[in-house]
Image (cartoon, rainbow, N blue to C red; front, top):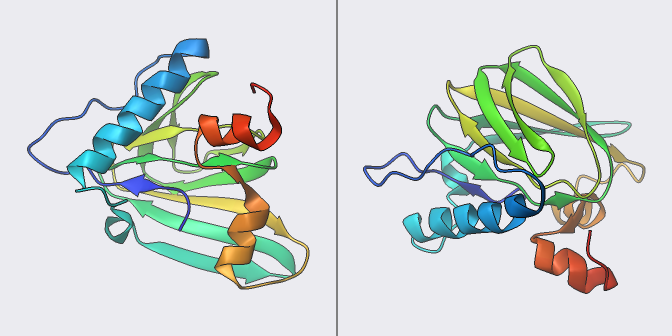
Length: 162
């Protein structure tokens, strides 16, 4: 399901998300995503990142445990949404910069953002999205929430560079 997640808890080292920003970030995060997928034998490793789904009227929450030393690369979201770091400590990289987040942090992700997250400690992260139809069909939610899996998909969807 979303976001693509990859567990790199192995002897093979893949660097944690780096502070690469701007135009250099996109090829760097794609390379990271491909390296993680290769480490997982072509799979997404989602089974290593427990997810709990929460529903309230008009709202969908997605809670994920990112185990210590786990790394995820997310899909590109269509809308701004809230992020709540419930507990833990992680390094987050986007094309706009890198930062560390800790339990108690709440922030907004902007539309079109793709991020790489490396957990420094076991981290529980919740994303909160609108769910105007109150569906609990995760495929329909993903269709509404996700703009694209990759930057290439994003460009192909509307013919413009984002």
